[in-house]
Image (cartoon, rainbow, N blue to C red):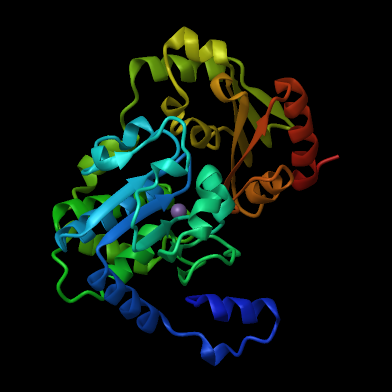
Length: 358
Ligand SMILES: [Mn+2]
């Protein structure tokens, strides 16, 4: 397992190319430092990426419930709506969802900011500068590649299946933790969603051992699977049908693109958060190794692009071309004030390079 858990100073020395590996504190050292910080601070702010997934929301809520047990004052702010299929999670109504996020949303006198499932502070957009200038202690707990330097503590494991997995290992270091149903369910959903229901590559025996513990603490796999994956509203089903009826395929079906336009949302009375699971479903089509969902979000003059892929075909590589990011098999990017069809053509051209077809 590859672990980076570095202080700011140590990240600096990595940058200068002279990091002495033995100077990196091990997981245990960083974890016990963090548990200590949790114990001895009072006002917490939890942040995660916008367009939150199950790992982002589940990890945030698990940490919320843990800190709540310790009678801490905890705020969670997320900058965009929570997908419908995650709204059953315990504590969901504690999340603040400002409609026009700005620095005034951030509570005063925060001691500790914990940033989950995110390592690039620029993704916090309107909060970015305020967080950087904040005197609060900043902690990053994450599993994405190439963490950016801005925090005081990093508990990062790029080989972990999910932030939920890292958080489980961290909280396990607290001898006094009460593994409540709330914590267990939220961590279970974090891990389940980021492993694509325990089938993506990083699903190893360790993940299953952790999940076994969570089941012992009360998480119910049947209930949680049904809530997250086996529920789609009638309107979302109609939207999916519209998307499928317009599905386009390229390069012998290696690439498929589903386009959902503003008028499709209007026609079915749905929102972007109702498209959960759409892009993943495209990967089950014969021959498809890369699937793209393009959505027109008129309120923000935005075209939101979600990319999923199989094997070594990199969704991340495609997204990076357009200033986006993510993992090898799941990534995304956005365009503003752009023409939908033009963007689609550009994406197809770039995807072609990755799919290596002529
Ligand atoms: Mn994640």
